[in-house]
Image (cartoon, rainbow, N blue to C red):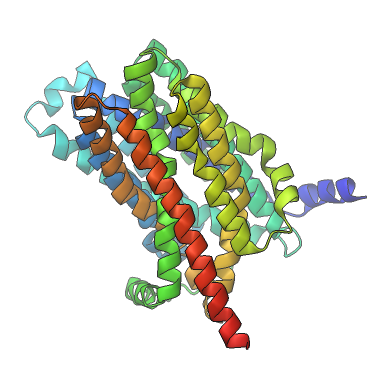
Length: 424
């Protein structure tokens, strides 16, 4: 009976708007990950930035993408998700087009008198602003278009479709850049966002949600930030978690450079990253969840950290396409173990009545990781390559990964002792 019941849940447990929102999320992720995988190569090989400069720009862009939704969610609640999607896809389409146009000969005369660095930075900030409305609007839609019985399944569907987009985007990016150039990958992202703008206008319908407090101002949101930052236990947890995401995002910073510079300049690094990463999650998320569902939540997070940290150990042993793919798969397995439990743990660590507030900051570690880790990755690669010692990259990344696992183990130990003292 379990399978038919689950099919019935999928067929009748969600309002039609649920499927519209998740379909748009798939194509938005396709657009995002497609351009993200070529970003560093595009900035260096086409626009002439150094690896360190590219890392700085990537960090600002990626950090804002994951930080701004904290405030963007407030505006999405006020405006309604349909209007928020309209703004998001319009701005994203414009932003991706402008970023790609910087590498096109047709626009050379338009931008000739401007500083390329500051011009690109402006385009990246604009694009990040558009992207800030997507996740709050999609996750908000999932919450109000599913029942209590199907809500967990709804988030699972959302997570699965995100990874489908993360697989398709880089795959298409490889096919496009191989034939036309990296700048045209941004045109694919532009078209994808414009298509979703049309879908939103034609198919998305706002669903009333009396639980949303539209009177909450941006000032109140900033006051809430102070509440979160004042919870030392939560902030330490998030800071440790940011180390985990630093080692993940180097798949988009270091891996493209290393493959093209030291292995094969024509290698399909986009395929390697997406199929080993998102592909593994698409195939194995359910069985991994089943195998680890009985692990205590903090134990599951620690196991996930430990397994994911193997990415750079495996790659560092003998850097090559097979070991890079194997390392990315290892990271993905660790992510599958800990990711679902992460949100569960946040709900338990939050003070009574503040679960929703604390969940709103769940993406903060990724923002921190992008702001800090992307510039570090670009600088580390540039200096190690210049010194003729690329192996230093693996030593540093292994240190961050192992350090993250050890800090999480220490955190678990301290928290366990604190809880034992409270219950003694």
